[in-house]
Length: 625
Image 1 (spheres, rainbow, N blue to C red):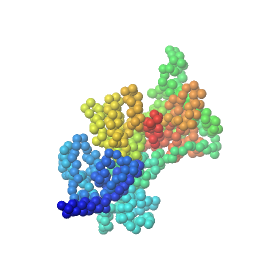
Image 2 (cartoon, rainbow, N blue to C red):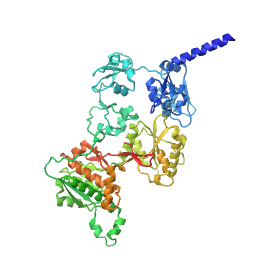
Image 3 (cartoon, rainbow, N blue to C red):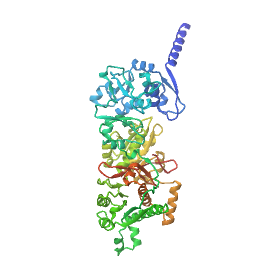
Image 4 (cartoon, helix red, strand yellow):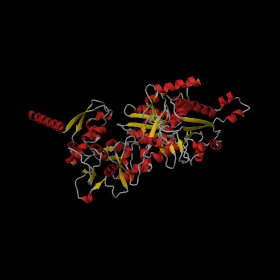
C-alpha cells in the first residue's frame, strides 16, 4: 500500500512540474482582449479559454490567466480533435469567430459543409494550429522608405518577434530595400511571391494615411467600396493608419476631404479691391403683399417656408455684422429670389444686377433653382452655394452643396464603426426598403438579425450574432414601436456578457414617444450621424445670447445655419485665393455645422462634414468623432 501511494505521489508531482514548465501566467491589463493576448503569446483564444473557462464570461483587469506554451498547444492539437456540436441559430461566421479559424480551414476539416451546409446537431471538427497545414509558399516583402517593423508586421498579420525570427539580420536595424522573408521558408526564386512586386501587375501599393476611411479611399481610387473590399479583404476589419492596400495601378490619388485638416480660416487682406457676396433668399414679398386674405402677421404664423427664410436671414445678418466688425472688405447684396419649388426670378436678377462679377452667391433654397443659378454663372465660374438642399443634384462645376446627403450620413456612420473595429449587425424593418437597398449595395458584410414572424427581435437571435471581445454595434431602422422595444430589450439582456451600442442611421420620431424609455436609450448610448451638433462652448453661448438680444427668440437650426454658411463663405473669400482652392485645401467647423467639401464623381462639390453623436450618461448628446 505504501508503495502504491508513493508511485501516485511521484506521478502527481511529475504532472505538476510538467504543467508548470509548459504554462506561463499573464496579468490582464485594462482594455486588453483575449484576441490581443492570444496573438502576443502566439496561441489561439480557444487555447486560453480551455485553461481559463472563467475568461469566457468577462475579462477583468488584473485577472491572472494561464497561457499554454506553443509546444503544449501543439501536443493538444495532435493528441485529439476539438469538436463542436451545432446549436440552433448558430452560423458558420459565429463558429469561425468563436474558435478563431478561417472559413477555408473549417470547411477543409468538414468537407460535408460544402455540400450540405451548416445544420443543427452536426458535430464539427475544429482545426487548431497544427491540425490542418497546407504547403505555404514563401512570401517576401521589399522594405520601402518610412516603413517600420511594426507597420510591416501589422500588414501581414504577424508579430515583430516572428518577423525578426525569420530575418535575424534586421534585429538591429531595418535597411530600405531589404528583401524580407514574411511567410514560409526560403525557396527558389521562381516560387517567391511578393505583395510588393507590382511592377508587372495591374495594381500598386498604397499606405493608408491619418483620417482616411473606407469611404474616402474608395472615392480616391475611383472604385466602389465593394470592389475595394474584394481587392483588400483585410479592410473589413477596419481602416488603420499605415496599412498597405492594393489599388489599381492607374489610380491618381487626389486630396480628399477626409485627409484635410480642420482649421479656423484667418482673413488675409493682402489683396486689392473688395469681395462681392450675393444672397438669393426666397422672401416672396410680392406674394405676401398680394395676399388680401391674411395679414402679414397671420401669414407668418401659417407659412413655415417664410419662417425658415426669415430665420436663415437673421443668422446671415449676424454673420455680415461680424464681418463688418472685423473690417473685412466684403460688399453684400441681398435679393428676393421669389422662388417656389417649380421656378424663380433668378434669371432676371442675374441679368439686371450683373451677378457674373460676384465672387460667390449663396442660394437659392430649392435645388432646381440653385442649379439654374449655377448654370447661368458657370461661364464665369462663380461659386453658387446651395444652403439647404439635401438632394444629390446634377453635376455642375460651380455648384457647392452644403448639406450632406443621406448616403453620406450613413456611410460616415459605418466608417466610424469600422474604424473602431466594431462588430456591426442590423435590425431592419422590411418596410425600410431604402435602407435595405443601401446595405445590399454598400455594406454587404453587415449581417441582418433575423426577425420573428411578427417582426420583433428575440434576445437569442441577437446574441448569436454578437462577439464577446468587441463593441457590438446594433443598427436599428424601424418606425414600429414594438420592434424598437423588443430590440432594446434584447440588447439590455445581452449587456452583462457583451458590449453593445444602439445605432440609428436617420432621425426616428418614434423614439420620442412616451412608450420608448429615454433612460434605456441613454443606457445603450444611442449613436447616430448628424449634420449639426449642439454647441455648448462659451463661444456658442455668446452667439445664442446675442441672437436672443437681437431677435427676442432663441436661434433655430435654420438661423444657426444661416450664420454658419454665410460666415464660412466670407472667410473663404478672404484667403487671397479662389473659393475652389480653399475648398480643396481646408475643412472648417463653425458654430454647429462642418464644411468638409469633396469633389463629386461628375462635377461640382458636396459636403461630408458629419458629426457622430451619442447619448451620454448626463442626458446630453456628445460628439464621438
